[in-house]
Length: 306
Image (cartoon, rainbow, N blue to C red; front, side, top):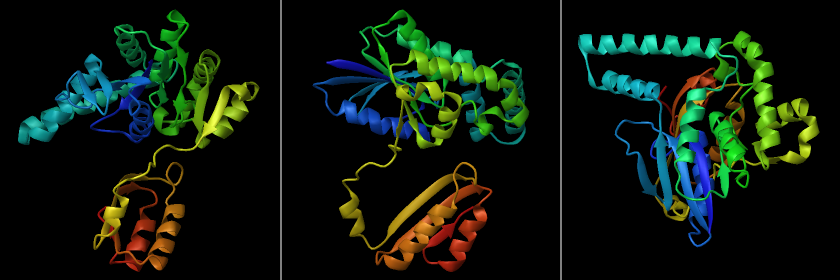
């Protein structure tokens, strides 16, 4: 039996988009218990979550730093308090955000070494022989932890799967100046990832950057399709209901998540499909006007909750 360890950010039950994609991959391995044992090391997203638990034949191990737990406590108090107490915790949150932003700006690169350390510590505490580690990005810190573990345990194979961008991620760096200042150091981290990993799998959004910055490592990288969509065994049952509800919550952004293509698909679907479908959007971003146009054209099918 091969033991595979996934290193991810937010995972079950409070998935991030990357966590959900990695979960789909992890489930492919954990479904075959005769061949694979799967462990997922993930970030704590709530103070109520246990340190360890079983989920879909996977051993989940949750990690966090002292600062992470402090932020979770502040968030919980903001949700549960009112009046003066709520105002106090909002001030604490603002202070926390300012300190975090200052730490990001003053660091020589964009990797949080505290995160790297707690992922690496979790790997070092495992009481079994690891065959392969599959880290992701973001958080890029999981990649650095996997490589650090491999430096000691040289037989371990490391296969990063890259989703969100790192060195050229404008959102991660907060400002363009910070992005430019850290670019050279971040490129060195990405090069280390490529040279020290067994093989790298990247989404198409990484392709132009990797071909431009690391053209000499083409054989080390495979460009993959997004593993977000999987076969839904409930689809037939759902389609026989009177109406299907589809909900999207999150950001729509021209640069990161452009809405124009999706809007065209929705329009074609509503014009041609005989099924009764209602799309619910809970969104913010710089392309919300497209949702408003769809709602005006298809008021019975599009609900813009803002």
